[in-house]
Length: 148
Image (cartoon, rainbow, N blue to C red; front, side, top):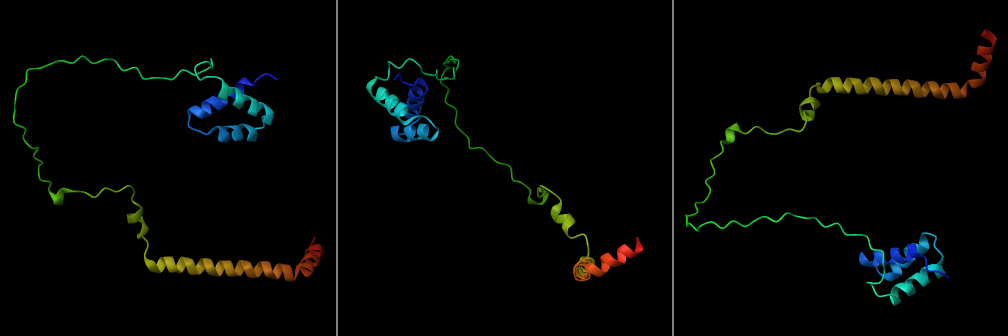
């Protein structure tokens, strides 16, 4: 039985990433590969030295240009600590991501309570209407049939 190259290179790549051989084999098995093919590829991977396996994705290495080193005459200058200017605390403006906090308190509290009371009353009226319709559905259907 020929060795499945896909499994072989996949196991090799998993080992290069630091996975154990068992976890890589289990991953292939969970992906639906045949157990015998996976074991055969693992045996072949263990027998073949690493430098003989022909397929290896080229690693991308960043090529940095060489920067020439320019030597300058050594001049000793005293290093002075950086002096930070004093910041005026009164000039600082607090940063805000949004105006949410300012808009939140625009309505007076009594208006909010009135709106809530009206909505609760409306909800109770609608609930009682639905209950009434379920209780008197036969009478409502008969009345609508007599009209139309």
